[in-house]
Image 1 (tube, helix red, strand yellow):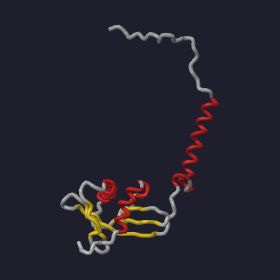
Image 2: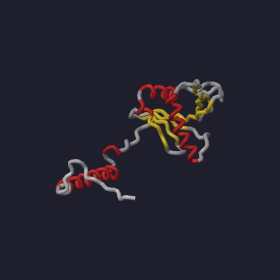
Image 3: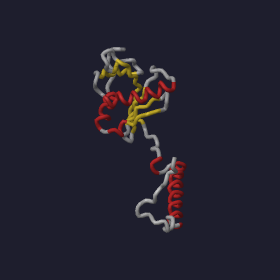
Image 4: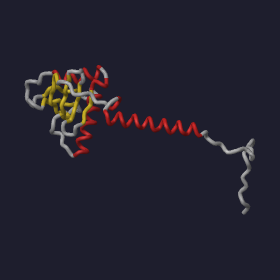
Length: 166
């Protein structure tokens, strides 16, 4: 077998000096990286910028709710305090609500927590509407997803429980 012979690329100069990045450009790039990392860490440590959490505001309304699957594929929303059916959501509707519940119940199943514990739907004085799971400490801020979603969850918050117990 004959050895492999590599030819120079067309237009390549064998006498050309190797490419070198100017030292000031390297220093500036390193300084930029250090500044960005320092700002990100200080934002995390001192709580400003995107990492800043809003202080809790006063609760205007809150309701403990459990969600169970109905035999027809719908969802029964039960007031956990009175054990009365608060709402019955028909199958194929309320896709966002189903998705939010799926995300929260996935966290419960990963933690080995059952479905019996209620979720909490809370309206705060600053306008936020939050569905939270007190068992896993996870929550979904409904107001982040637009007026249509807020309206769907607001109905669950303000609906009086049905007269018939579950």
